[in-house]
Structures are given as C-alpha cells and as structure tokens.
Length: 237
Image 1 (spheres, rainbow, N blue to C red):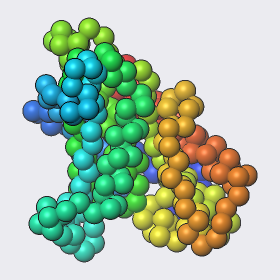
Image 2 (cartoon, helix red, strand yellow; image 1 turned 90 degrees about the vertical axis):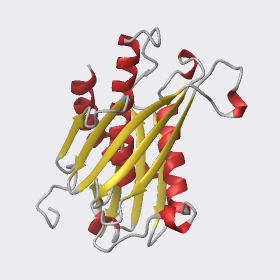
Image 3 (cartoon, rainbow, N blue to C red; image 1 turned 120 degrees about the vertical axis):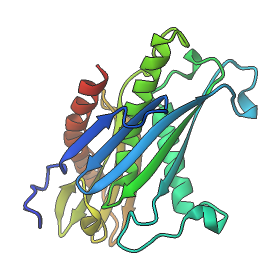
C-alpha cells in the first residue's frame, strides 16, 4: 500500500465536469486526486501558413500553471517574456495526442486551440490535461455537428494519458507529486481507447530501465486508462 492507503495499481479519485465554462466551444474540468485542470476548446476560421489552400485543419495546444497552483508562487511566464522549455514540451505533447485521434480532413481549414490551465498541481498535470482536452474536444465537435458547421464528428476515437513509475522496486500507477519526485523510473503514457500508444515519455531518474519494465509499466498504465476511458464515454456517448 502507498502512503495514503491507495493500492499500487489504483488511480487517484477522478472527476470530469463537462461544459465547465460558458463561452468556449467545448470545455471540461478535471480533478485527478489533488490535481485540478480546466481545459477549453476554441475554433477559429484560419490555419497556419503551411496548411493554407489544403482544406485541412490544425490543432494547437497551450498549457499554463496558475501562480498558486503549487505550494510556492510560480512567476507567470508571460511576465518573463518567454515560454519555458518544460511548457513548450507539454504543449507539443498535448497537441500531438489530440491530432492523433482527429480526422483533420473533415474540418474545412479551421484551427482548434486547446487551452489547458492548471489551477492546482499535485502530479500528472500533463496527463490530466490530455484526458480532459479529449472530452472538451469531443463536446465541441458535437456542437459543431448540431449547428451544421461540419457534416460529421472528426473525433475518431478517445485518447487519454496516465503516469506510471517505479519506487523501491514497486510499480505504481498514477503518481502524485510526492511519488513522482522519488521515482526511480517515470513514464507518461498516452494511449487510444483501442490500445494504440500515441506517446511514451520515459526517464530513468535513478537508474536505467529495461524493455521488460517498459512492457510491465505500459500494461499497468492500460489498466488505469480503461477506467478513464469509461468516464470519457459516459460523458460523450
């Protein structure tokens, strides 16, 4: 058992609230343990220069943490005049994860902006952002179909993400900040509901890790993701 009594193979309590904000085309609020994130979808009638005239659309993500989402105040990146390398990496990860499950050919030259704002951080902010963004995106597409803005829903399948790691030889599912900071091995796993892996971010914080450990950890991640996919399905379908 872990410090808080949670089994090694159990995710934290999770709650996703759809249509959390009034004005966004789609939105979702997620609580994953003590981690809390608001995600929104905005649709604009334009595309990046490299897609002009192609008839295809694009999905872009932005991610930020409120100054008091952590124990000590974070300086807003906007006041520093630049986005940190960590933030840039997370934004690209969110964008790739969502583009992997959307048929961009079904959207006539639109840009879908995903905004993920962490209001409280206790580990897993990027994975929670991906999970909630999928819900917000699905809701936005449903509204666009209802308004005859598009002919069919471009969301091909669900996508979600979860963290896994190893501490003192124990394989843990969905680590909080305290666990993540002590992990020997730390993986973030992004998968579709049909079991395809979109991305694995893995780090040997203390030691190298083996292929067998990756297989075990991704299988453990799948166990937690099945629970998350069921929540997503209840909201969207």
